[in-house]
Image 1 (cartoon, one colour):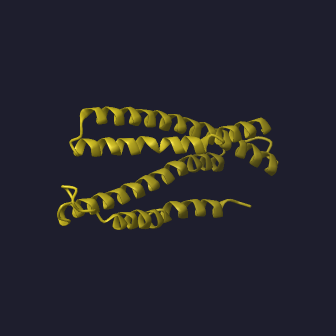
Image 2: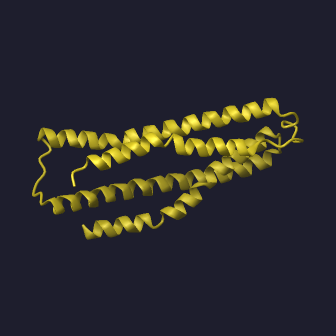
Image 3: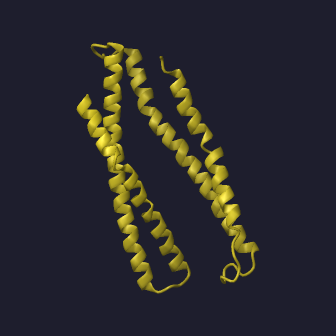
Length: 180
């Protein structure tokens, strides 16, 4: 169990670097889209595509590390729980254990679905606001006027706080329902 915990920590130590590198993919992808919409030369789009590919590669590697470390953390937590509770064996065919396994396996997917839905609705609000700005601010398409950045930041901030209440509540309810 100690070896599993050390391996988990080893994998998690690289996560900050991986997440920092992971940010380059969407940024360069957006830059490529802007370059294309602005009618810039094809050379610029080739460069942003190469950066986007590098960002996608690092994102995939980061996800692999996250999945691997999560599996190891789960194993370490289960081992700690079993040793602390003094459980000698686990019978998966017992109805309570089987139901617990199914519900426990479902929770990460439920949480992920809730967060993806939140991000999707926040992104939709942002897109609607940007479209309204393009239609209502004269000169924005030509580059002679500035967009209202503060309003977009407000949408993002409000959504990050309000939309994450249900996933956060799911985690808190799960923590409160566990026996002490």
